[in-house]
Image (cartoon, rainbow over all chains, first blue to last red; front, top):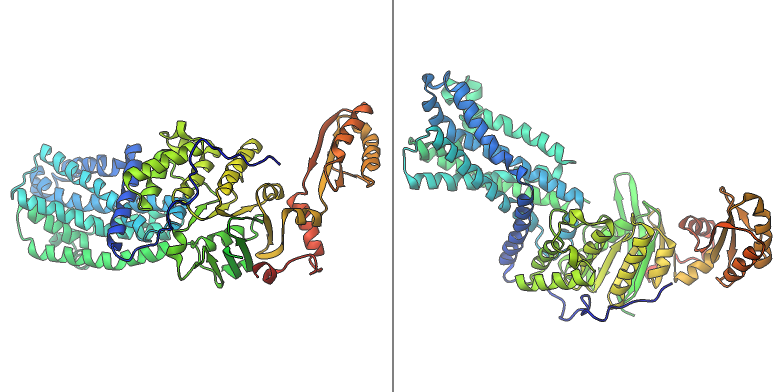
Amino acid sequence: MSTTVVDQTTPSPVARREPPRTPSRTGRAGAIWRHALALAQRSLIKLRRTPEALIDVTLQPIIFLGLFTYVFGGAIAGGSQHEYLQFLLPGLLGQTIAMASVSLGQNLNADIEKGVFDRFRSLPIARSAPLVGAVMADLVRYLILFFVTVGVGLLMGFDITTGLLPVLAALALSMGFALCFGWISVYVGMKARTPGSVQGIMFLIVLPLSFGSNTFVQTSTLPGWLQAFVKVNPITHLVGAVRGLMIGGPVAVDLMWTLVWMAGLLAVFFPLALRAYRRPA
Amino acid sequence: MTYAIEASGLTKRFGATQALAGVGLAVTEGRVLGVLGPNGAGKTTAVRILATLLQADSGSARVAGHDVVRDAARVRSMIGLTGQYASVDEDLTGTQNLVLIGKLLDLSSRGAKARAGELLEWFDLTEAAERTAKTYSGGMRRRLDLAASLVGRPSVIFLDEPTTGLDPAKREEMWDVVRRVVAEGSTVLLTTQYLDEADALADEITVIDRGRVIAHDTPDGLKHLVGGQRLRVRPTDPRRAGDVAAILADLTGRTPETGLRGELTVRVDDDSSLPDLVARVRDAGITVHELSLHLPSLDEVFLTLTGRSADPGTLTDDEGAAA
């Protein structure tokens, strides 16, 4: 057997020079935040390398906006495509936010499959940090979604009838909602066997929620049993609040229910996702 | 003696499969333990338990003096793990991979970059530092993976099958890398399916099979147990096999066995007969396709060990290895 060759020219990168780190009790929240930021940065680097991963927050809302405005606009809203665009745009924001959450779970599922998360699990960081980091990075995608949808809407003739502050409130509310709703996708991503099945399961959740709402038509036009579903649907409340904030109308009740739903989704799916993340072998 | 890793009675069941059925092992500080076993023996499960990725159903383990369940966070701050499947992020460059780990270990931005540069240089990856890991060869990925596990200067390093899937030249290269890491004084637990790899790198070898420890010894002790090395000769002309057999029998005093492809194999106690064999074969005018001296394969080790497992005198059982 050949003898050990030790490279003398470079300093030893292995030997310990300092005493072992011990996890400090103080500044724990700060540490989670720092680690999650570092991991969010990783997700963003990956996003920059694969711009096609932005299709669901760029091309998709544009196509939906055009398709629904010009195909259905004439038949709905008394034949006025402009009227329908006013109604539709806040609704589409809600729907595309729900749809854009699908890729979050898919990416996490793929990461786990590839073993990258084994390394994170073996590091002295909070167990929640990789998941929180992934959700934080997704905020960039939701911001793109919001500005693309509103920007293209404005070009198509969408009127913001309220003002800058209400629109900023709508932005904040939809971003907050996206960050809470995303935990459903994280949970499914932890539980499903393959990235493909994450997509399948998520669409079963997202499609009824986004179509079975006030996104495309007024709730009052629906049969009674469906109205019962639509009226508790979180997407309905988000869309209702955003609609009010952009084109006027009542906001308070929908805003309150949206916030309740956000708290509820976070309270249920954050711990579920974390438990599922700790679990797999 | 101070053990950097000590485990006893580890069991783990996945559904109907009993992955570990009471594994005990111990590694003295600064030494290298090779955990040898076939696919499915429970090597990876044991490593994952010791590296706090998995909890055992029963049994206990301490790594760097801390309990892997109660003090998992402290254990994590002392270990480095290189998995069976290189767990580098393919979409990140070599530098980005290492800087990320550095930041997660609370190095400053500048500190993480400096550390990344140092490790990339040490592992001969400086030229590839700014390329995404996707473009790396298998050997480069393994080196980057190993580098990533060293960012935090761990005192205990787990290497789970570091060379599985690499071609022979890359394997040798990886062995050199592992030797350099070992020379720095870290404690290493290395799993492998190859006796020659354990022999090349480890101070002691624990052999596990179907979730149990079936032997624990030094490499020399284990080789002695299994019967040393094998000389193998495959003559170009199969009709000369008889002549080769006669030479081998004369040199070693043992009757060679004939394999499927006409190769002749005979046990030897050391490598001193190799030069004689070469000379005698040449003098007899025999050309050969293959003439080699090799260690017993894992198959041969297992045949011997399971064949003799009734004899407790030569084998160390679980309790013995964990003591």
